[in-house]
Length: 492
Length: 39
Image 1 (cartoon, each protein chain N blue to C red):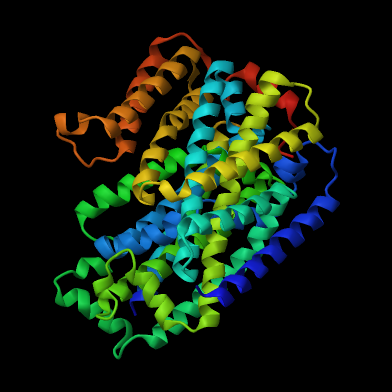
Image 2: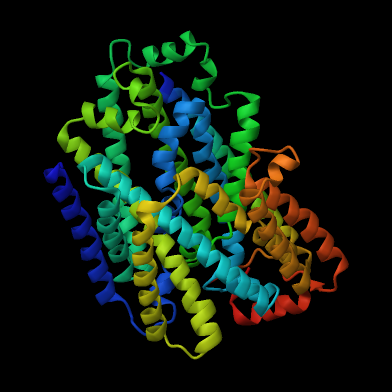
């Protein structure tokens, strides 16, 4: 075990997380509404930008991209670009709608559009889905620890899980935001230094030799962002659809946007968040391509070549820095993935069903309990999970019908019955696609789950919304406009 | 160099997406008459 590296990184993380957590916890006005969950809606541009970027930059961006770059080359950068499109959609539409409705949780938005039953359905599924992502992030933290220090994935997940819970439980959203800002700087500077060091350390011929390796094997497409038309259709398009339709209405991504100071803050944050997230993948993919082209690391295969090359080539101080950088990326996603379902539980279950008069102190206490319980459960199962990328695609497909129902409900028509049936049918189809031989029967083996939920959401959701009775869309209904305007302050 | 080629291509794609979406979003806000900002 590389004890020196482990201790150095743990000391750094604990000082930053606990230091900022305690500072903001003391500074926070404890009775002000939304203080813990939404930082009193006062987060500035830089904090919102890095939090949005890092919330959707986690385990799949690191280990998934190392592995994907081995198989499909530079086209795997589309995984990162899909998240850019997601941030663009969120910051220019869904996040703005969420702010205008002055909500704290996304199921609350469903309530405003469709009513209580769809709200509870979305709350249960969304909380479960984000907890699923949380377990994968816990697994990712365990793998980061295991790779760098040699301890087991299970032990790594427990150490990282404790850090992840501290990341969020002391001062809530404000703590996550400011710790993210520091970690983001450490992460990017670390990545750039590591990249320079790796470039200088490449065998004679440098990147030209890496490119020659693929050209000589008649795999020049591996060096191109657009790859082949087949890869663009199966991988790039599938990833874009899956990521955009699930995450752009997910509590995980919406909560930092709801905590922003104003709509202008969100719009400005996009210009910073998009490159922070989208360019991260370039570093990982290039390192993955270099590892495959290097005869020393090629025999290790897609799972180990990239990380082993970094461990063997970089000096110990830079390995520690890179370890801190990767840990920062995963911990920031872990923090939002544990905060989001705890928020949904507090707002949509506890406050909505059991204690409508809950005070800020009650909300903070229940959210903290949720954070501890969900975090500990995620650590417990982290060592026994399926491969990260395949699991995440299945999880993401669950939210597709909710995205389309929100679009229908805001801009077309609100039908409670159509919403309930569309969600139920889409979710059943998603399950059948994953756990039965349905794809083989209809000859579409390998088609991503999101294609199925997308088709059912648009076709069944569209038809049911058209034929079943309902009210006009919330944003086109004059009475709804008055209702929204009276509850929030709209200024032109 | 491979890294810079991919880096610049991605950067152009990212800012093109952001700029186009920002333009369309403002147009859509005007269309639905909801340009007001929530404080």
